[in-house]
Image (cartoon, rainbow, N blue to C red; front, side, top):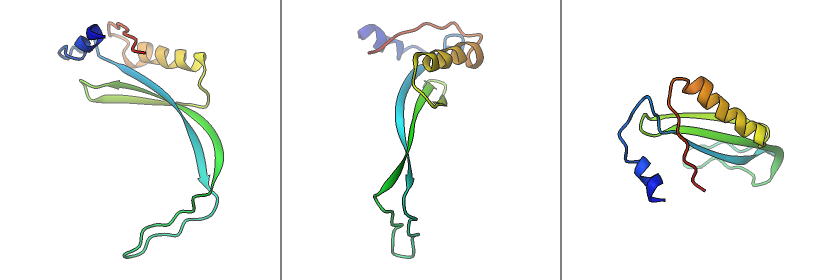
Length: 105
């Protein structure tokens, strides 16, 4: 673990960007009844009942030392979707970079 933490203390090098990847799934919902808009001295009111509209996957690539982030949305969360995000990172977003992978589990 200490080896991984040392990576975060390295100075910024555009040839060897420090890229972090995170993924999650999110439920998509819609309001089942129209909300009541806000008025002076009154907040917007939303009915807690909702309609489920499926699930989507969110992949976020961030380069904290450069202040960049790239978000990719996929309809599924499979090995192929993960591999496509990695391919896009290597081939399209950072084609000239020397990439080294550190996995944190």
